Image (cartoon, rainbow over all chains, first blue to last red; front, side, top):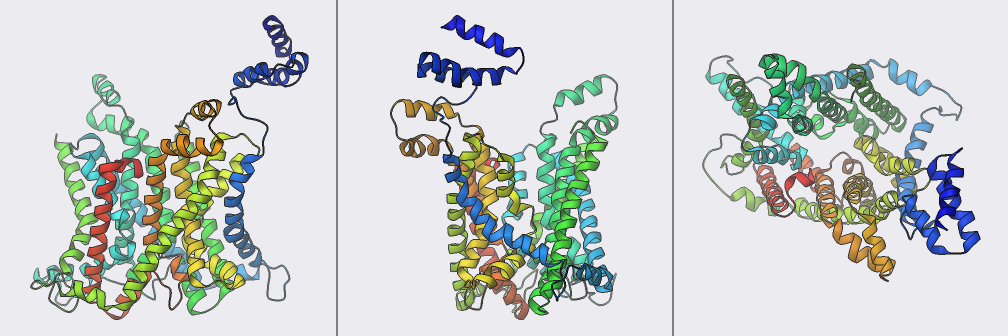
Length: 327
Length: 259
């Protein structure tokens, strides 16, 4: 039997890949010829499939409930929302909804403010997160504690985190007190409800994500590489520039995508720390839908937000792949 | 060494920036002034007593807890079998299914809230509680899927086969072989999902009604009219609970496994 099996394989292997020939052999020839199920199982194992697996549709039972739930409550509603934005009130296909929105100066302001604030926050997070992550990963003796202290704010409600800035940056807050007492200003100035306070809030909200993403990749940079670079005569700066920095790019990319999209879609922070004249996309959706009752406008803003989020995350990833094809 | 010192300086500043504001809130909760102030004046626990007097906080905390736990539980019921099937069986369209279960993280939560309100709540005339539960379940599904999928990837399915060969029923195998092996993955997935759901604002903002609200929304509504240390006291209480949860995680699973 064994020799027959081997011959069979050799013959089959000529034109098709090994896996396929095993499969065909096991399924038809062998079982039909000898009627021995153990051989069939043997083949199944060679295929790398679990022994007891029958051709079964039981997996459908496992995935269907979740799929149905997500389809009914998320995907179908989402597609109807996107679909509806392409039709005007009479039911005819039109892009009028988009033209109206894109031409409104209010939307343009809100849109560019969202992009600008997210971009500034991402750059600051990268600038602050990189040295911090590098220190924690390479020099710190209390790595666990520092990681936990970075995670703690992430577990704390964004509402609480925004409140704290209201206390600190308010007219009676500690920053104004210090500025007045040092004589830099005479009267407390308004530090809240503007773009500055929003950026401060965003950075505090998303900096931990940047730090943790960077630590993730920096931990994998072997100390040997630094030593090798050093022994070949590279200065510390050169080692950093040519070894550590390029190897940290994936973490920087992941972190930047998380921070940028996080800032772009955050609602709590701009709602609490921003003013009525510093609306961003997220607060605009809420305002259009809940205060003004303009569902169509809100839907169009929502679609714009989805498109920007997807474009940015795939865009940053594409750029980073171009810069460093090894990622 | 010089370099590590400047790195240390940045790190310290970053941590002051991250943790400082939270300490400010905690300190402000003991202030005797009737507005939020740091540094505070005097010391009082009056504001902690005041939390109980704000009726909306009590009911919102109750709903927040119920929603966070029940939604995570439903997400687990829906996500665990799916994660199992995706790891265990080969079938066509696997990547599509996987993408579908992870898709809620790709859609901005604020958009999800708006979509839910417009096309689910308004269409099916759902009351606030079920719609909040559905929304939070959608949020929790990707958390559950991601963590459980990665712990199933480390599970050796031949153990399951061994049990079956030895005569165990498929149900018995599931509960006595598979489940104990991926238990820590399930627990960390649930903790993340519960915390995420408890802190969520963007989704809940669209789905709450006058009677049924969640804690973060009520806190936001409260500060619009009152800016007294009650809110700082409540925030401090919530942070202490968070710290407690983190300590328990660290002692049992290790914090690294959750994040």
